[in-house]
Length: 216
Image (cartoon, rainbow, N blue to C red; front, side):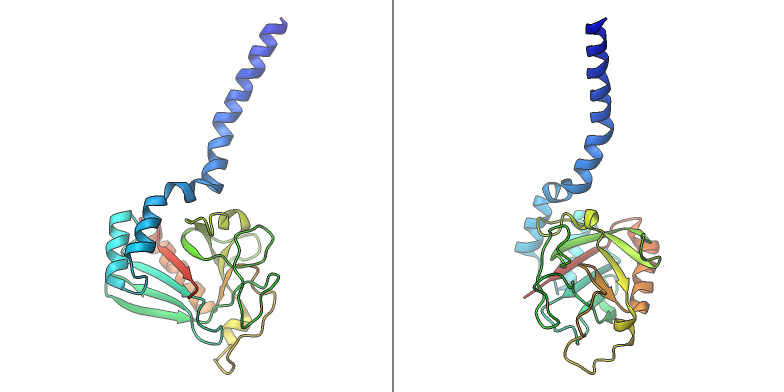
């Protein structure tokens, strides 16, 4: 009887492992390890500002060839630095101001980047959209990181969402005053979020839309 209970216990543990371990692994670690080849090509062979090269890369690697989003944190927050591109027409269709995370060490003029949970910092690297809406924001898009620098983005709850401070900002200062509007998320204008949500609905379900955040 004792041996039977031990065997049943082992079987239960195996079933639990099969059901729960792979999803957890995929959610928090697989994006980094699975995309090593993709990342090597992106970082060594593609100019992130060349829409022709980006479109060819996306076509080869299974990303959307309709849209592409580039976020350039090298630019001050008082300048528009969140750019949406139409890859089919080879042109920019929208740009927005964008706040970076307000975690420890961040200032309006100097962003700090981290992938650590609880850091409150923005992460650099490649992302794609995985869904609309969140616990805190109804109008937002959830993200998943693809690189070592941001593979915990989904677990951290990193979003593209709006804030009144960004929506009302008109470029009158070099930097948007630092606040708690972003704890690592891409915080943009309301119209920009609406456009991103539209893109997710129209394009991202067929092929994930590539988002790339860079700094210098």
